[in-house]
Image (cartoon, rainbow, N blue to C red; front, side, top):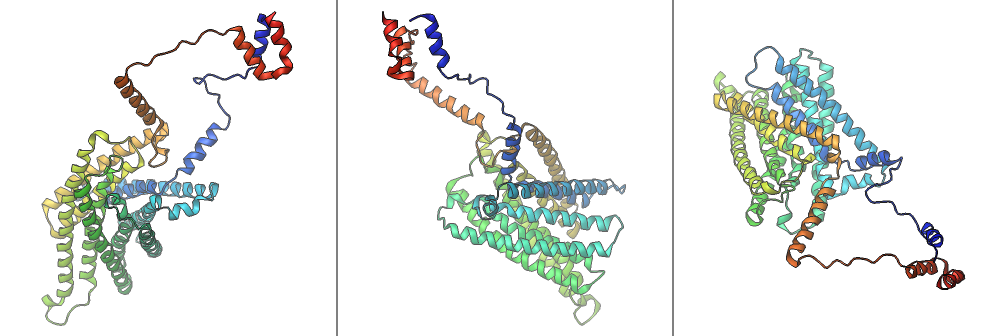
Length: 460
Protein backbone atom coordinates (compact mmCIF):
# COMPACT_ATOMS: atom_id res chain seq x y z
CA UNK A 1 0.00 0.00 0.00
CA UNK A 2 1.35 3.42 -0.90
CA UNK A 3 1.91 6.20 1.61
CA UNK A 4 -0.81 8.38 0.06
CA UNK A 5 -3.42 5.66 0.54
CA UNK A 6 -2.40 5.25 4.21
CA UNK A 7 -2.71 9.00 4.73
CA UNK A 8 -6.16 8.88 3.09
CA UNK A 9 -7.33 6.16 5.50
CA UNK A 10 -5.91 7.92 8.54
CA UNK A 11 -7.65 11.12 7.51
CA UNK A 12 -10.97 9.25 7.45
CA UNK A 13 -10.61 8.14 11.06
CA UNK A 14 -12.34 10.42 13.66
CA UNK A 15 -10.18 12.81 15.64
CA UNK A 16 -10.02 12.20 19.36
CA UNK A 17 -8.71 15.23 21.32
CA UNK A 18 -6.21 14.56 24.10
CA UNK A 19 -7.59 14.15 27.61
CA UNK A 20 -5.26 16.80 28.95
CA UNK A 21 -6.79 19.51 26.77
CA UNK A 22 -10.58 19.62 27.30
CA UNK A 23 -12.49 21.79 24.91
CA UNK A 24 -14.07 24.80 26.65
CA UNK A 25 -17.74 25.45 26.12
CA UNK A 26 -19.30 28.92 26.11
CA UNK A 27 -22.04 27.85 28.56
CA UNK A 28 -19.65 26.38 31.13
CA UNK A 29 -20.01 29.34 33.51
CA UNK A 30 -23.80 29.29 33.28
CA UNK A 31 -23.93 25.54 33.92
CA UNK A 32 -21.65 25.97 36.93
CA UNK A 33 -23.92 28.55 38.54
CA UNK A 34 -27.00 26.48 37.77
CA UNK A 35 -25.38 23.58 39.60
CA UNK A 36 -24.58 25.79 42.58
CA UNK A 37 -28.14 27.06 42.72
CA UNK A 38 -29.39 23.49 42.50
CA UNK A 39 -27.20 22.50 45.46
CA UNK A 40 -28.87 24.99 47.80
CA UNK A 41 -29.73 23.50 51.18
CA UNK A 42 -31.60 24.80 54.23
CA UNK A 43 -28.38 24.08 56.10
CA UNK A 44 -26.97 27.37 54.82
CA UNK A 45 -29.21 29.26 57.26
CA UNK A 46 -26.95 28.05 60.07
CA UNK A 47 -24.67 30.94 59.07
CA UNK A 48 -27.51 33.36 59.84
CA UNK A 49 -28.03 31.65 63.19
CA UNK A 50 -24.34 31.84 64.09
CA UNK A 51 -24.08 35.52 63.16
CA UNK A 52 -27.25 36.32 65.10
CA UNK A 53 -25.92 34.53 68.18
CA UNK A 54 -22.67 36.54 68.02
CA UNK A 55 -24.67 39.76 67.73
CA UNK A 56 -26.66 38.79 70.83
CA UNK A 57 -23.46 37.98 72.76
CA UNK A 58 -22.01 41.38 71.90
CA UNK A 59 -25.23 43.02 73.06
CA UNK A 60 -25.24 41.18 76.42
CA UNK A 61 -21.48 41.05 77.02
CA UNK A 62 -20.97 41.47 80.79
CA UNK A 63 -17.83 43.63 80.72
CA UNK A 64 -18.79 46.58 78.54
CA UNK A 65 -16.72 49.75 78.73
CA UNK A 66 -19.64 52.17 78.40
CA UNK A 67 -18.43 53.63 75.09
CA UNK A 68 -21.04 51.83 73.04
CA UNK A 69 -18.45 49.92 71.01
CA UNK A 70 -20.14 46.59 71.72
CA UNK A 71 -23.51 48.05 70.72
CA UNK A 72 -22.07 49.30 67.44
CA UNK A 73 -20.48 45.91 66.73
CA UNK A 74 -23.77 44.16 67.54
CA UNK A 75 -25.64 46.50 65.20
CA UNK A 76 -23.09 45.91 62.41
CA UNK A 77 -23.44 42.14 62.73
CA UNK A 78 -27.23 42.49 62.70
CA UNK A 79 -27.16 44.45 59.44
CA UNK A 80 -24.76 41.95 57.86
CA UNK A 81 -26.97 39.10 59.08
CA UNK A 82 -30.02 40.73 57.54
CA UNK A 83 -28.33 41.02 54.14
CA UNK A 84 -27.18 37.41 54.37
CA UNK A 85 -30.69 36.22 55.23
CA UNK A 86 -32.16 38.03 52.23
CA UNK A 87 -29.50 36.55 49.92
CA UNK A 88 -30.26 33.02 51.12
CA UNK A 89 -33.98 33.56 50.62
CA UNK A 90 -33.31 34.72 47.04
CA UNK A 91 -31.15 31.64 46.53
CA UNK A 92 -33.97 29.36 47.73
CA UNK A 93 -36.51 31.09 45.47
CA UNK A 94 -34.11 30.78 42.52
CA UNK A 95 -33.80 27.03 43.07
CA UNK A 96 -37.56 26.57 43.29
CA UNK A 97 -38.01 28.66 40.12
CA UNK A 98 -35.28 27.04 38.02
CA UNK A 99 -35.94 23.50 39.26
CA UNK A 100 -39.70 23.11 39.84
CA UNK A 101 -39.37 19.43 40.74
CA UNK A 102 -37.32 20.38 43.80
CA UNK A 103 -40.14 22.35 45.44
CA UNK A 104 -41.72 19.34 47.09
CA UNK A 105 -38.36 17.63 47.60
CA UNK A 106 -37.03 20.53 49.68
CA UNK A 107 -39.94 20.08 52.09
CA UNK A 108 -40.37 16.31 52.20
CA UNK A 109 -36.92 14.78 51.76
CA UNK A 110 -35.91 13.56 55.24
CA UNK A 111 -32.21 14.12 54.50
CA UNK A 112 -32.60 17.86 53.85
CA UNK A 113 -35.98 18.89 55.28
CA UNK A 114 -34.69 18.45 58.85
CA UNK A 115 -32.75 21.66 58.39
CA UNK A 116 -35.82 23.78 57.58
CA UNK A 117 -35.73 24.65 61.26
CA UNK A 118 -32.55 26.63 60.57
CA UNK A 119 -34.68 29.03 58.52
CA UNK A 120 -37.08 29.79 61.38
CA UNK A 121 -34.22 29.97 63.88
CA UNK A 122 -32.32 32.40 61.68
CA UNK A 123 -35.42 34.58 61.35
CA UNK A 124 -35.84 34.50 65.14
CA UNK A 125 -32.24 35.66 65.66
CA UNK A 126 -32.90 38.61 63.35
CA UNK A 127 -36.10 39.50 65.21
CA UNK A 128 -34.29 39.38 68.55
CA UNK A 129 -31.48 41.57 67.22
CA UNK A 130 -33.98 44.09 65.86
CA UNK A 131 -35.70 44.13 69.25
CA UNK A 132 -32.37 44.91 70.92
CA UNK A 133 -31.73 47.71 68.44
CA UNK A 134 -35.17 49.18 69.17
CA UNK A 135 -34.40 49.16 72.90
CA UNK A 136 -30.69 50.04 73.03
CA UNK A 137 -30.55 52.87 70.56
CA UNK A 138 -33.26 54.91 72.23
CA UNK A 139 -35.85 54.59 69.48
CA UNK A 140 -38.51 53.00 71.67
CA UNK A 141 -40.82 52.96 68.70
CA UNK A 142 -44.09 51.30 69.68
CA UNK A 143 -45.01 50.64 66.04
CA UNK A 144 -41.72 48.83 65.42
CA UNK A 145 -42.19 46.84 68.62
CA UNK A 146 -45.62 45.59 67.61
CA UNK A 147 -44.43 44.89 64.07
CA UNK A 148 -41.63 42.71 65.40
CA UNK A 149 -44.11 41.06 67.77
CA UNK A 150 -46.34 40.19 64.80
CA UNK A 151 -43.34 38.73 62.98
CA UNK A 152 -42.59 36.66 66.07
CA UNK A 153 -46.11 35.20 65.97
CA UNK A 154 -45.69 34.36 62.28
CA UNK A 155 -42.32 32.75 62.93
CA UNK A 156 -43.77 30.82 65.89
CA UNK A 157 -46.52 29.37 63.70
CA UNK A 158 -43.93 28.33 61.11
CA UNK A 159 -41.78 26.81 63.85
CA UNK A 160 -44.68 24.70 65.12
CA UNK A 161 -45.50 23.57 61.59
CA UNK A 162 -41.87 22.67 60.96
CA UNK A 163 -41.45 20.86 64.27
CA UNK A 164 -44.55 18.71 64.17
CA UNK A 165 -44.49 18.30 60.38
CA UNK A 166 -40.96 16.92 60.46
CA UNK A 167 -41.81 14.67 63.39
CA UNK A 168 -44.63 13.30 61.25
CA UNK A 169 -42.25 12.68 58.34
CA UNK A 170 -39.69 11.00 60.59
CA UNK A 171 -42.33 8.71 62.03
CA UNK A 172 -43.06 7.57 58.47
CA UNK A 173 -39.47 6.38 58.04
CA UNK A 174 -40.07 3.50 60.52
CA UNK A 175 -36.35 2.86 61.01
CA UNK A 176 -35.41 0.50 63.84
CA UNK A 177 -31.65 0.96 63.50
CA UNK A 178 -30.37 2.97 66.47
CA UNK A 179 -27.04 3.59 64.75
CA UNK A 180 -28.81 5.93 62.29
CA UNK A 181 -29.78 8.34 65.07
CA UNK A 182 -28.21 11.74 64.43
CA UNK A 183 -28.15 15.01 66.41
CA UNK A 184 -29.89 16.61 63.41
CA UNK A 185 -33.07 14.92 64.64
CA UNK A 186 -33.12 17.61 67.36
CA UNK A 187 -33.37 20.47 64.85
CA UNK A 188 -37.21 20.45 64.75
CA UNK A 189 -37.24 20.55 68.56
CA UNK A 190 -34.72 23.41 68.66
CA UNK A 191 -37.12 25.59 66.66
CA UNK A 192 -39.68 25.48 69.49
CA UNK A 193 -37.10 26.33 72.16
CA UNK A 194 -35.68 29.19 70.10
CA UNK A 195 -39.11 30.76 69.61
CA UNK A 196 -39.76 30.35 73.33
CA UNK A 197 -36.63 32.35 74.20
CA UNK A 198 -37.62 35.02 71.70
CA UNK A 199 -41.12 35.23 73.19
CA UNK A 200 -39.65 35.81 76.64
CA UNK A 201 -37.71 38.80 75.33
CA UNK A 202 -40.89 40.24 73.82
CA UNK A 203 -42.78 39.76 77.08
CA UNK A 204 -40.13 41.87 78.81
CA UNK A 205 -40.46 44.66 76.23
CA UNK A 206 -44.28 44.56 76.21
CA UNK A 207 -44.65 44.98 79.97
CA UNK A 208 -44.50 48.77 79.68
CA UNK A 209 -47.26 48.81 77.05
CA UNK A 210 -49.66 45.97 77.79
CA UNK A 211 -49.71 43.64 80.77
CA UNK A 212 -52.13 41.28 79.00
CA UNK A 213 -50.07 40.94 75.81
CA UNK A 214 -46.90 40.40 77.84
CA UNK A 215 -48.58 37.66 79.89
CA UNK A 216 -49.91 36.08 76.67
CA UNK A 217 -46.44 36.04 75.16
CA UNK A 218 -44.79 34.42 78.17
CA UNK A 219 -47.61 31.85 78.45
CA UNK A 220 -47.23 30.74 74.83
CA UNK A 221 -43.44 30.74 75.22
CA UNK A 222 -43.66 28.54 78.32
CA UNK A 223 -45.82 26.02 76.45
CA UNK A 224 -43.37 25.79 73.54
CA UNK A 225 -40.48 25.52 75.98
CA UNK A 226 -42.12 22.64 77.86
CA UNK A 227 -42.74 20.73 74.63
CA UNK A 228 -39.23 21.40 73.33
CA UNK A 229 -37.44 20.42 76.54
CA UNK A 230 -39.47 17.22 76.91
CA UNK A 231 -38.44 16.07 73.42
CA UNK A 232 -34.87 17.21 74.13
CA UNK A 233 -34.54 14.97 77.16
CA UNK A 234 -35.84 11.95 75.23
CA UNK A 235 -33.62 12.48 72.17
CA UNK A 236 -30.55 13.27 74.28
CA UNK A 237 -30.97 10.02 76.18
CA UNK A 238 -31.43 8.04 72.96
CA UNK A 239 -28.39 9.67 71.36
CA UNK A 240 -26.21 8.92 74.39
CA UNK A 241 -27.32 5.27 74.20
CA UNK A 242 -26.42 5.27 70.49
CA UNK A 243 -22.91 6.55 71.33
CA UNK A 244 -22.44 3.84 73.96
CA UNK A 245 -23.55 1.03 71.64
CA UNK A 246 -22.12 2.15 68.28
CA UNK A 247 -19.37 4.60 69.14
CA UNK A 248 -18.86 8.15 67.83
CA UNK A 249 -20.46 9.34 64.63
CA UNK A 250 -18.67 9.04 61.31
CA UNK A 251 -15.98 11.60 60.64
CA UNK A 252 -18.14 13.36 58.04
CA UNK A 253 -20.81 14.25 60.63
CA UNK A 254 -18.98 14.01 63.95
CA UNK A 255 -18.91 17.81 64.32
CA UNK A 256 -22.70 17.76 64.59
CA UNK A 257 -22.33 16.14 68.02
CA UNK A 258 -22.18 19.71 69.34
CA UNK A 259 -25.81 20.13 68.19
CA UNK A 260 -26.98 18.44 71.39
CA UNK A 261 -25.68 21.50 73.22
CA UNK A 262 -28.05 23.86 71.39
CA UNK A 263 -31.40 22.89 73.01
CA UNK A 264 -29.72 22.76 76.43
CA UNK A 265 -28.17 26.21 76.20
CA UNK A 266 -31.16 27.80 74.47
CA UNK A 267 -33.57 26.07 76.83
CA UNK A 268 -31.74 27.36 79.91
CA UNK A 269 -31.72 30.89 78.47
CA UNK A 270 -35.46 30.64 77.76
CA UNK A 271 -36.10 29.40 81.32
CA UNK A 272 -34.31 32.36 82.87
CA UNK A 273 -36.13 34.81 80.59
CA UNK A 274 -39.51 33.28 81.32
CA UNK A 275 -38.80 33.23 85.07
CA UNK A 276 -37.93 36.92 85.13
CA UNK A 277 -41.10 37.71 83.17
CA UNK A 278 -43.30 35.63 85.48
CA UNK A 279 -41.78 37.30 88.53
CA UNK A 280 -42.92 40.66 87.16
CA UNK A 281 -46.23 39.62 85.62
CA UNK A 282 -47.83 37.22 88.10
CA UNK A 283 -50.52 38.87 90.20
CA UNK A 284 -49.48 39.71 93.74
CA UNK A 285 -50.82 37.43 96.44
CA UNK A 286 -52.93 38.97 99.23
CA UNK A 287 -51.02 39.62 102.43
CA UNK A 288 -48.08 41.63 103.73
CA UNK A 289 -45.66 43.27 101.30
CA UNK A 290 -42.84 40.69 101.55
CA UNK A 291 -45.22 37.83 100.85
CA UNK A 292 -47.04 39.58 98.03
CA UNK A 293 -44.31 38.82 95.48
CA UNK A 294 -43.97 35.22 96.62
CA UNK A 295 -45.62 33.54 93.56
CA UNK A 296 -43.33 35.31 91.11
CA UNK A 297 -40.27 34.70 93.27
CA UNK A 298 -41.04 30.98 93.53
CA UNK A 299 -41.47 30.72 89.76
CA UNK A 300 -38.24 32.60 89.16
CA UNK A 301 -36.34 30.42 91.63
CA UNK A 302 -37.61 27.25 89.98
CA UNK A 303 -36.53 28.55 86.57
CA UNK A 304 -33.05 29.39 87.88
CA UNK A 305 -32.68 25.84 89.25
CA UNK A 306 -33.80 24.37 85.92
CA UNK A 307 -31.43 26.61 83.97
CA UNK A 308 -28.52 25.60 86.20
CA UNK A 309 -29.35 21.92 85.62
CA UNK A 310 -29.37 22.48 81.86
CA UNK A 311 -26.06 24.35 82.10
CA UNK A 312 -24.55 21.38 83.95
CA UNK A 313 -25.81 19.00 81.28
CA UNK A 314 -24.28 21.31 78.68
CA UNK A 315 -20.87 21.03 80.32
CA UNK A 316 -21.15 17.25 80.12
CA UNK A 317 -22.12 17.33 76.45
CA UNK A 318 -19.23 19.64 75.62
CA UNK A 319 -16.95 16.94 76.96
CA UNK A 320 -18.79 14.19 75.04
CA UNK A 321 -18.56 16.19 71.79
CA UNK A 322 -14.83 16.82 72.28
CA UNK A 323 -14.22 13.12 73.01
CA UNK A 324 -16.13 12.11 69.87
CA UNK A 325 -14.21 14.54 67.67
CA UNK A 326 -10.90 13.37 69.17
CA UNK A 327 -11.78 9.78 68.21
CA UNK A 328 -12.31 10.84 64.57
CA UNK A 329 -9.63 13.55 64.41
CA UNK A 330 -7.53 11.71 61.81
CA UNK A 331 -10.49 11.34 59.43
CA UNK A 332 -12.12 14.79 59.69
CA UNK A 333 -13.52 15.93 56.32
CA UNK A 334 -12.63 19.01 54.32
CA UNK A 335 -14.32 22.30 55.14
CA UNK A 336 -18.06 22.38 54.44
CA UNK A 337 -21.03 24.48 55.51
CA UNK A 338 -21.64 22.01 58.35
CA UNK A 339 -18.59 23.42 60.19
CA UNK A 340 -20.78 26.38 61.14
CA UNK A 341 -22.76 24.00 63.35
CA UNK A 342 -19.97 24.25 65.92
CA UNK A 343 -20.46 28.01 66.38
CA UNK A 344 -24.18 28.05 67.21
CA UNK A 345 -24.22 25.52 70.11
CA UNK A 346 -21.24 27.14 71.82
CA UNK A 347 -22.80 30.55 71.28
CA UNK A 348 -26.07 29.71 73.03
CA UNK A 349 -24.11 27.99 75.82
CA UNK A 350 -22.15 31.21 76.35
CA UNK A 351 -25.42 33.19 76.36
CA UNK A 352 -26.81 30.89 79.08
CA UNK A 353 -23.67 31.35 81.18
CA UNK A 354 -23.89 35.15 80.92
CA UNK A 355 -27.58 35.09 81.80
CA UNK A 356 -26.89 32.91 84.83
CA UNK A 357 -24.28 35.42 85.94
CA UNK A 358 -26.92 38.16 85.77
CA UNK A 359 -29.63 36.14 87.53
CA UNK A 360 -27.35 34.94 90.35
CA UNK A 361 -25.12 38.03 90.41
CA UNK A 362 -22.25 35.58 90.14
CA UNK A 363 -18.73 36.77 89.16
CA UNK A 364 -17.85 33.19 88.19
CA UNK A 365 -20.62 32.85 85.61
CA UNK A 366 -19.89 36.33 84.26
CA UNK A 367 -16.24 35.49 83.76
CA UNK A 368 -17.01 32.02 82.40
CA UNK A 369 -19.62 33.40 80.00
CA UNK A 370 -17.30 36.18 78.81
CA UNK A 371 -14.47 33.71 78.22
CA UNK A 372 -16.71 31.28 76.35
CA UNK A 373 -18.12 34.17 74.30
CA UNK A 374 -14.57 35.13 73.33
CA UNK A 375 -14.02 31.56 72.12
CA UNK A 376 -17.24 31.80 70.09
CA UNK A 377 -16.10 35.06 68.49
CA UNK A 378 -12.81 33.41 67.54
CA UNK A 379 -14.66 30.42 66.07
CA UNK A 380 -16.91 32.73 64.06
CA UNK A 381 -13.98 34.70 62.63
CA UNK A 382 -12.00 31.58 61.69
CA UNK A 383 -15.03 29.87 60.15
CA UNK A 384 -16.02 33.02 58.27
CA UNK A 385 -12.53 33.48 56.80
CA UNK A 386 -12.39 29.79 55.84
CA UNK A 387 -15.80 30.16 54.20
CA UNK A 388 -14.51 33.01 52.05
CA UNK A 389 -11.71 30.74 50.80
CA UNK A 390 -14.18 27.94 50.08
CA UNK A 391 -16.47 30.37 48.24
CA UNK A 392 -13.54 31.55 46.13
CA UNK A 393 -12.56 28.04 45.03
CA UNK A 394 -16.20 26.87 44.84
CA UNK A 395 -15.81 23.88 47.16
CA UNK A 396 -18.42 25.13 49.62
CA UNK A 397 -21.09 24.97 46.93
CA UNK A 398 -20.75 21.21 46.53
CA UNK A 399 -23.82 19.23 47.36
CA UNK A 400 -23.89 18.23 51.05
CA UNK A 401 -22.57 14.70 51.43
CA UNK A 402 -20.94 14.62 48.01
CA UNK A 403 -17.39 13.33 47.75
CA UNK A 404 -15.07 15.68 45.86
CA UNK A 405 -13.32 14.49 42.72
CA UNK A 406 -9.91 14.84 44.33
CA UNK A 407 -10.91 12.50 47.16
CA UNK A 408 -12.27 9.94 44.69
CA UNK A 409 -9.05 10.08 42.63
CA UNK A 410 -6.93 9.69 45.74
CA UNK A 411 -9.00 6.70 46.81
CA UNK A 412 -8.58 5.04 43.39
CA UNK A 413 -4.82 5.67 43.46
CA UNK A 414 -4.61 4.15 46.93
CA UNK A 415 -6.50 1.02 45.83
CA UNK A 416 -4.29 0.59 42.76
CA UNK A 417 -1.19 1.08 44.85
CA UNK A 418 -2.28 -1.58 47.33
CA UNK A 419 -3.02 -4.00 44.53
CA UNK A 420 0.37 -3.27 42.94
CA UNK A 421 2.13 -3.97 46.24
CA UNK A 422 0.30 -7.27 46.67
CA UNK A 423 0.56 -8.73 43.14
CA UNK A 424 3.67 -6.96 41.85
CA UNK A 425 4.03 -5.27 38.46
CA UNK A 426 1.93 -6.75 35.66
CA UNK A 427 3.42 -7.82 32.37
CA UNK A 428 3.19 -4.97 29.91
CA UNK A 429 2.82 -5.95 26.25
CA UNK A 430 4.42 -3.56 23.79
CA UNK A 431 2.12 -3.05 20.82
CA UNK A 432 3.77 -3.59 17.45
CA UNK A 433 3.97 -0.83 14.89
CA UNK A 434 1.21 -0.43 12.33
CA UNK A 435 1.53 -2.92 9.46
CA UNK A 436 -0.02 -2.64 5.98
CA UNK A 437 -2.38 -5.55 6.75
CA UNK A 438 -3.71 -3.66 9.77
CA UNK A 439 -4.46 -0.63 7.63
CA UNK A 440 -6.24 -2.86 5.08
CA UNK A 441 -8.42 -4.33 7.83
CA UNK A 442 -9.41 -0.88 8.96
CA UNK A 443 -10.21 0.11 5.37
CA UNK A 444 -12.39 -2.96 4.85
CA UNK A 445 -14.22 -2.24 8.11
CA UNK A 446 -14.90 1.36 7.14
CA UNK A 447 -15.89 0.94 3.47
CA UNK A 448 -16.84 -2.73 3.12
CA UNK A 449 -16.39 -4.95 0.07
CA UNK A 450 -17.07 -2.17 -2.45
CA UNK A 451 -13.51 -0.96 -1.84
CA UNK A 452 -12.01 -4.40 -2.48
CA UNK A 453 -10.16 -2.90 -5.43
CA UNK A 454 -7.97 -0.99 -3.03
CA UNK A 455 -7.03 -4.17 -1.21
CA UNK A 456 -6.36 -6.15 -4.46
CA UNK A 457 -4.17 -3.38 -5.82
CA UNK A 458 -2.14 -3.18 -2.63
CA UNK A 459 -1.45 -6.94 -2.68
CA UNK A 460 0.05 -6.95 -6.19
